[in-house]
Amino acid sequence: MIGLVMAGGKSLRMGSDKGLLVTKTGEIWAKSAWNKLQSCGIKSYVGINPLQTSSYSPHIPPANIILDHPDIVAPGPIQGILSAHLSYPKEDILVLACDMPNMEISCLQDLMEFRNSQPNALAWVYQNGEQIEPMCAIYSANGLEKLSALLEKKELIPTSLISILNRLQAAIKPVSAENTKNFINCNTPEEIN
Image 1 (cartoon, one colour):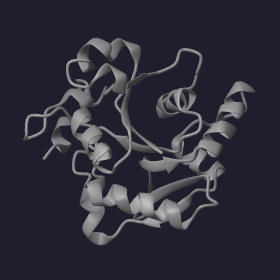
Image 2 (cartoon, rainbow, N blue to C red; image 1 turned 90 degrees about the vertical axis):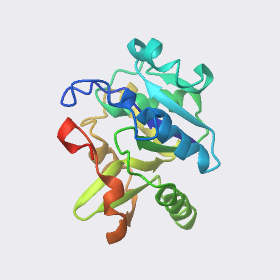
Image 3 (tube, rainbow, N blue to C red; image 1 turned 30 degrees about the vertical axis):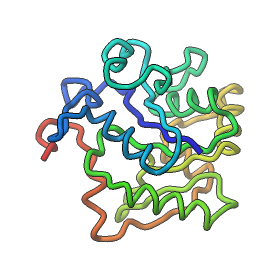
């Protein structure tokens, strides 16, 4: 399994690149998320679009950056996930959004253990109350291979991660009450604490 920080979005509501926002400890959000994935003992990468390369290369080693692949034409985060799958087709991918700055390593490790307890699933995801958390989830290599084939045949519609997780019949792990704060997704300046 590899880890993938998703930082390739447009950050329109935030007004600036969310992955480049700085934590209280002085790290950019993308690097903080990358370090959390690395702490889980898996080789990890940051997924960005090609226009972000010069902004991220001072913070993330170039060998740990995966660029959105131009041949993967899909809107939203699935492009980044499938780009990582193209680079590492045999690996399951633990995805973490860069804009979940409160995520704790223990939640990531719990998800990895949940994956091991449900080996026949094609994806493993948290559910926070009524909400599925597709940006803190594990996507299996087999599931991503199926999605790639569907995309190639132009049959991957819709491409939202929630619909994709439904298609993969993901195993769902409820978020405990004490961990709900870890799943705060910061999309606007007002949401940053």
